Amino acid sequence: MKDAIGNKVKQGDMVAWAIPAELRNVIAVVARVTDGGLSMGSTDQVSQPAITIVIDIPVTGLKPGQEATLHEFMRVVDPRGEALIEGLTQ
Image (cartoon, rainbow, N blue to C red; front, top):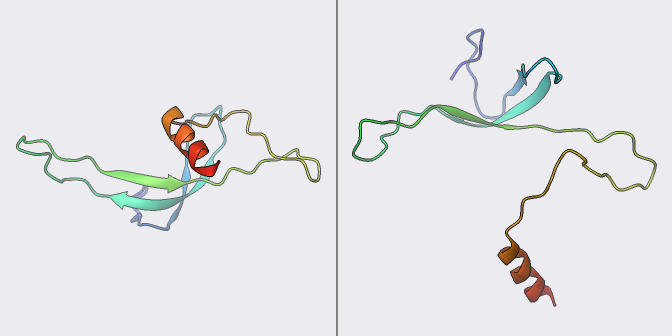
């Protein structure tokens, strides 16, 4: 897999991702590279190439000792899993 100017991209590389203009450029680390081309069963289809990236997002504007609140994120949970963990810890 290569980047926009032909450099080879491999696991652990740091990349800049040019996302929409209303967002800033993001620096990310490539965590996994999949070149694709694997057969998808008995069809002629093959898997697509993909990269997995890791992004550190700094949380700013906190007072000393204040817990960070991520206003733009929501945690996705399985209620059954939450109930199971609660049952195990009581």
